[in-house]
Length: 205
Image (cartoon, rainbow, N blue to C red; front, side, top):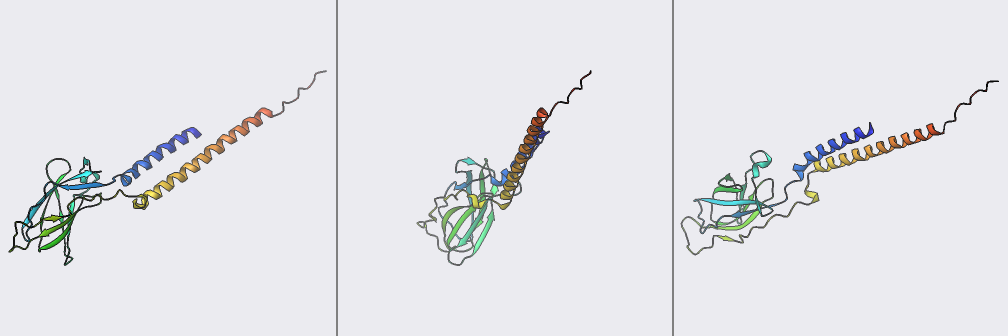
């Protein structure tokens, strides 16, 4: 009976760990542009093609975790603080996406692409030219080397995972104590039954 209860507990423990796995899964990913734009002009549409690779190696589908979790381009004007946000779409092979963006004003824009559930990759500052002044020698981007976000540490894990872990440990300790107590009770009962005095036989005269 005790052994059967123990195996049932093991099955329940595995089920809880399976539920907690998606929350712990992930790590980090890197976004790399297929090509750097040679010139960006305010008010003109621009299509940026890029790859998302988990741990910088394996192409990954960001929608695999459920829901519409497509990558998002975030940009902020360095001088005015104006922001814009554009959703990407799947295009071509696994892990490949395209985002269409139009920068509304000239100046320096800090650009980042966030591929949920991973943290974002900063693409650096994009220099956007005014619509009336195009320069063939202008530099389109600066500091464009991707900076992969660090893998989340212990403090980044959701609180629900810690509660599940604590609950599993508490159940394991309780079951271990129960099994040991039952085993000890059986051993004591067996020893007592072996030492009980035998009834004396009456003599027949």
